[in-house]
Image (cartoon, rainbow, N blue to C red; front, side, top):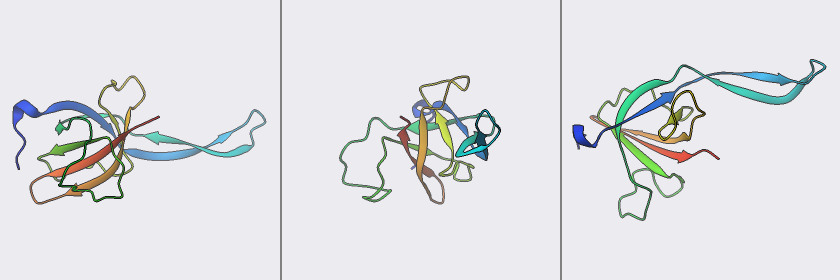
Length: 116
């Protein structure tokens, strides 16, 4: 299935970069980490409506996700560690995280869920 141009919506994704240990006021590590992401990149994809019950479940029964994005660029670097800006802009915090990526010969389907 190819993506029609009229169905494509713009969104931004940020790939995982690294994590740094958080320190308290005395300079001691707290055991918590801050995850850092690369600069957000603009992309376009067919973003589904809210998830409902369907007979076809491309990600299986165990994955909990809110929306799915279908793109006709299967070599996109988006992976399970990326965050997305769909309703928010890159100067705000990300609003979705990638749960699962399913690549095929011509397309890629990405299951995403809203961040708390």
